[in-house]
Amino acid sequence: MPKLKTVYSCQNCGTQYPKWYGQCKNCGEWNTLMEEVAEKQTTKNYAGGFGKQHIINIIEVETQAEERIKTPSQELNRVLGGGIVLGSVTLIGGEPGIGKSTLLLQLALKMKKKILYVSGEESASQIKMRANRLTELQNPECFLYTETSVDKILHEAKKLQPDFMIIDSIQTLHSSVMESSPGTVSQIRECSAEIIKYAKSTNTPVFLVGHITKDGQIAGPKVLEHMVDVVLNFDGDRNHLFRLLRANKNRFGSTAEIGIYEMISAGLKEIKNPSEILISKKSGEFSGNAVAVTMEGNRPMLLEIQALVSSAVYGTPQRSCTGFDAKRLNMLLAVLEKRAGFQLGAKDVFLNITGGIKTDDPALDLAVVASILSSNEDMTIAERYCFAGEIGLSGEIRPVPQIEKRISEAEKLGYEKIFVSVQNKIPKKLNIELVKVSKIEDFHEKLF
Image (cartoon, rainbow, N blue to C red; front, top):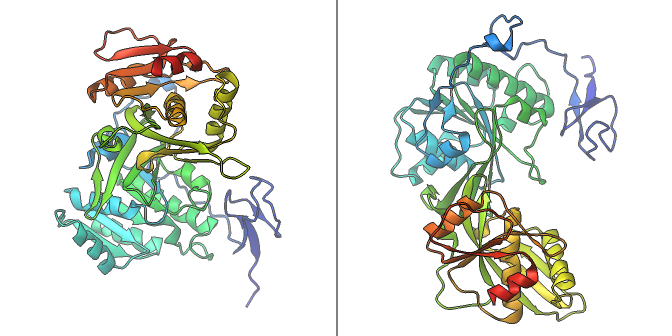
């Protein structure tokens, strides 16, 4: 038997080398080279379904509106840009146990269409047990197939002719064209290409579930994300109930929208108004609490910021935050000390965004500073006050985008006063009182 020729493939970018190196010279990642059986280059055409093409002037091209399938999940429709486009391939990634399979199983059971649910990780009885938890959902046209061979999957799909196909997960599949094991760069690339060709040629929408690495990136070659039409990221803190669905890439719509779900015993429940749930109902007045008006894409949300400032027990003060960037917290503390004269260098500062939500909106700065000052001076902030402003290194309050949407959301939820930058232009008259501030000293004086 002839000896198999092997190569070393980078699991991040797919570059091949004749021998092992510690670092990939193409993408710069360390320890990503894995030994695989060398494959012959295939000459398949993966752009199936387009037919013979010729050069055409862009002015002569006739545009057609994409036909979309509306799903029963309004949050998913929002993220996808109005529904699932026929023939599109969507990749959804997220941590283990976050709810990817539950989300897609709920979708399969709610939609009144012929669905093929392919699982390479669970048996049919395991999927049925999970479906039984979603008691109110039933779809007699939902078919299960537990298989990892992409050739058999596509053969059965062509016989069944489903309206929609779900594959959980792409890392478990293997193609007979390749001799390497499932999950390797070459297998993921080949299986994805065959599935995309099937989706485009039959106009069948396909959902792929993708595993992620410890860095939070979708496992496998980066080319996988380039090949598909939509890349969704399903994230959240497993110790909290809320899950956020974001679009990292969308060829048919905006990537600015997010969907919010709550994990309950009967599956994932859509959150129509997250602001009301994320703001806690206080039984008494406490210092260190402030409400920020943030934007997640085009969606305004109110988040509660909690801060605790106390004297440092040990020599080095602690800086700890949950859901907020630790480096930005250090910057805000430095600005408070240098520009406004607050002595916080020898104090422990703990910061938390309630509900397990993580956000990087700069408009949180003003609420963070308000909560820190409130805790430091042990003075409560009025319950109906909220904040939206970015803080610069010189201590100035900078304007934030989409201020009208933020103010309207605060007004809708019954807030009486909102602190914003003096540079923000608000043309229309509102029923909420606007407090315009220019510097931190000015802000502190008006707040307390």
